[in-house]
Amino acid sequence: MPCHNQQLNNVNSGQEHPMKQVRFANNSSSSSVLPTSEASDGSSIQTDGSQDTVGPQLKLLPLNDQIRELQTIIRDKTTSRGDFVFCADRLIRLVVEEGLNQLPYSECTVTTPTGYKYEGVKFERGNCGVSIMRSGEAMEQGLRDCCRSIRIGKILIQSDEETQKAKVFYAKFPPDVYRRKVLLMYPILSTGNTVIEAVRVLIEHGVQPRHIILLSLFSTPHGAKSIIQEFPDITILTTEVHPVAPTHFGQRYFGTD
Image 1 (cartoon, rainbow, N blue to C red):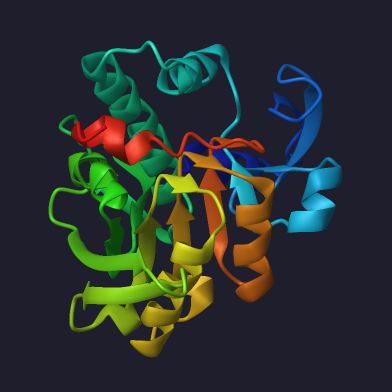
Image 2: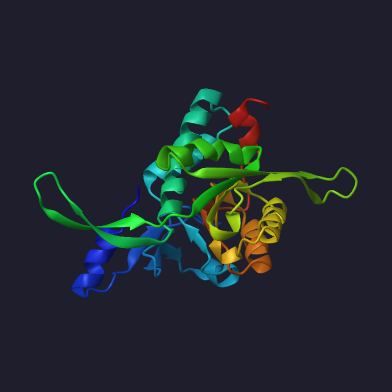
């Protein structure tokens, strides 16, 4: 489980969080170095011009060579399905771990086997996952690997053949979903229409947008902007914002391509 010990230590010592130098993919150069600042929850948020158009609700994982290689393998059309699934699962796990890092926690004290009192943190109860079928189901195991007993709901949304608009065909959530923080899972944000419809369904079930954290692997600028314009309080967590999204993800992952 993710831990906020370092953040708590910095707060207790009165030290300010230093500015980080984190590389983000952009249209001109994927290896440029952009400054990022610490959000109130300790997460890094992009502070270049794109954040001005999208907003601080869009958060990207700090890019390193490991993540960049996983992104490259997933995008490569010559990648075998075995390697594709393996790398996708690794990237999903990284996104899920950071998503859990956005959830509320409280301080606690535990006793170690040697009798030492350790000041730590524990996550608050009342969280759940919701996957947007079918590609969102690829992220369920990564969430269960981190939270064994977490409850997961599902939404099935497909495009209407005549109008091409997103239409809800199935939705099943925990009965008390309106009281929970929701980790909404959908790996590829292209137009954002599917996610927008899914969030509307969650709102109909009493979930507040500020309690929704959207976990994705890849997003287009248009997709992220459309979602945040519709729901300004939602949080989006992804690894890359790029004009071209790997829309083949679901077919490759489940072997239906």
